[in-house]
Image (cartoon, rainbow, N blue to C red; front, side, top):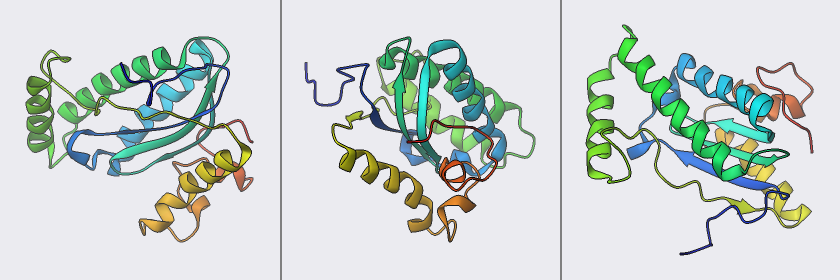
Length: 181
C-alpha cells in the first residue's frame, strides 16, 4: 500500500484538498458552503481538528490542518461522510436548485461505479495530504490557498472571498476562525 498520500504523523501540519466528483460546481450556493463551515466547527470542537487555513472554491476545498485529539484520517473521513450526506439532502430539498436532477444523477452514477460506496458519492475518494515539513512549504501552501480564488478570477484580493481564511489573516471578522500561523 502506497504511503505517498497518507497522514503519517498526526503531530504535523498537512495541506489537503478534496474535490466534488466530476468537479461539479456545488459550492456556488452559500447554503452548501455553510454546511462545510458547520462541519469544520464541529470537528474543531469535538474531534480536535486544527484549521490553519482554508478556502472553499466552487468544486473543491483546500486546507492546512493538524490535530490535537483524533487521527487526521478519521477526522477527514467523518467530515467528508457527514458533509456528503448533509449536502445531498440540502440539494434534494432546495427548491431553488435548478441543477438538482443533473447533480444527483452524476453523484448516484459515481456511487454505483465505486465499490467503496453504497449508491451515492459526493466527494472524490482522495485527499492528497501533503506533510508540510518546512516553513517554506507551509507558507507556499498558505499563499496558494489564499491566492487560488484570485487566480480563478472570483475576487481581486484574497480577503474578498468570505469563505476563506484570508479574511482571518487580513484581520477581518470571518465566518470561521482559524489558528493563525
